[in-house]
Length: 168
Image (cartoon, rainbow, N blue to C red; front, side, top):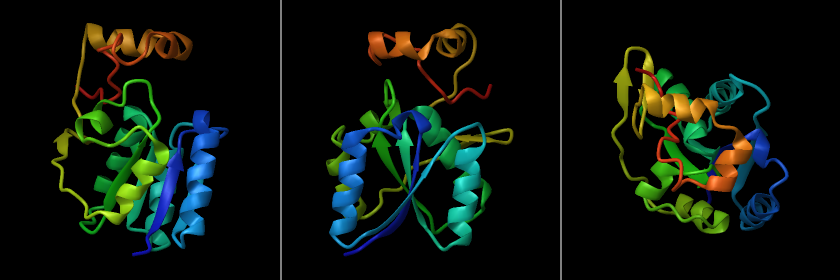
């Protein structure tokens, strides 16, 4: 089975050699995999809209929980019910990807594209969609005020408040 999908890659991962090799290997296997790299706020949502206009129905979030949130929001806002989401877990904690059993190895995560999609509930609060959770208060403050360098140093297990799905 060949797949046609679009990877929306978080800009911080643009030079990730593991991602680059996995994408090239996937293409060599005959799969149509386009890549767009985010640069600024709003890019992920714009890339999803453009992908849908071009006929893509499988989108891949290459980043952390915030990237997943942005892409899910754009997918849900499209009001289409024929879309699938895949995840390359490239964030600090990767809470949703971990809970969903998505492997950390990029090639293994991409290989899941050949498996049937598993339905997942998406929650809507006001005009925002999320898969993982919504937080507010102190936990959200810690997440938004912690530098990327410190998040990387401490890792996901140390920042249990590392939740990008903040809408309440």
